[in-house]
Amino acid sequence: MAESDAFTDRLDPEMCVVTTAVGERPTGCLVGFFSQCSIEPVRFTVWLSKANHTYEAARAAGCLGVHLLTREQHDLAALFGGECGAGYDKFAQARWTPGYGGAPVLTDAAAWFVGKVELRLDAGGDHVGFVVEPVQWGAGREGALLRLRHAVDIDPGHPPDRRPATSGG
Image 1 (cartoon, rainbow, N blue to C red):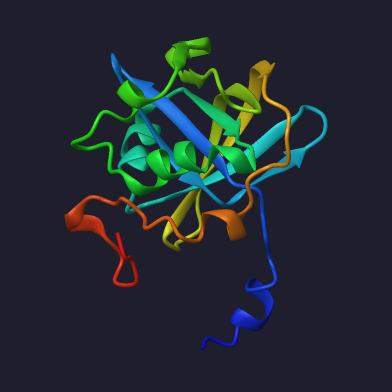
Image 2: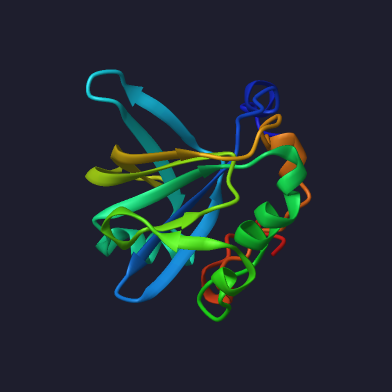
């Protein structure tokens, strides 16, 4: 057990699905590291794993969609967290529409926004932060939000050549 586990094991953040599109190809993934990082202007930072297929697309994208899910949407979370978009069309299994800048909007999400990528932050670890300024908002489904404790059974669907040593998926 790492020394940091005494702290990190107590965290239970909301999960979100981050989507983007480069050209005509939509992609998206389940994310547990994100937060509002500014009040004026309103901005959020989402941290994408360098091992994730969506990270590669997000590096070239101008906009990202960020979607909150309810606890009852575990299947949608598993689709975006457990399948690799490199060889699988997740969006064929989900209801969505193009949003601002072509970023896919999951129409069944509890709440969502699409924002312009203002900054990319590589702190030298295994994730890169994307600072996003929302330009389009929406809400749909009511219910308690999906949190990390509800998604721990989802094995990450990283491409086989980029799976972290600890990844089960």
